Length: 214
Image (cartoon, rainbow, N blue to C red; front, side):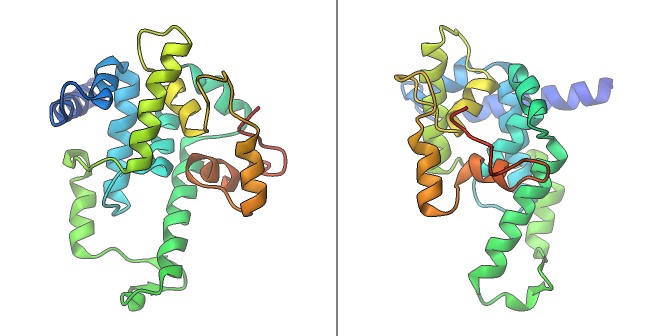
């Protein structure tokens, strides 16, 4: 247990160093400064998972894994919908593997029977995932910035994991809710994106009744 705590603090320290890579006056940098340790831990988890999956950046799908790993006050709600860390990891892995299989790139010989084979370079990244600091994808940057606005609207001095989760699901701080248009857009497109896609594809979650607005 002590080793795990020590490793966790080490990871948090590494991420704290990443804060200084952005301009101190930027809103995103200010969000990092306000984040709780658990929320920072969720970002560390997301970076490790992104590296493990061979992703060039940290996106909203993998950020969902981080939040489920360190949910803070969202734990009860996630449990209510049968959302677990194991299911989230498996769902995101399958999403990326499917995407890679359908891309039809020149590395098709590495994909057999739906199995995604990582190159030696990516395998090396996997082994060193805890030490990798990947950039945040633009959609995730917007999510994190919006999480700060959500925290403000809820009179919270810190940006916590539940604020990031709300932002991932499209919560509008001005309206004080997830607009119903979010679910309507999914119905019109026929598919979901980001965190909502992870939840709707997760085993044990009823996609016909799950609503981000609720």
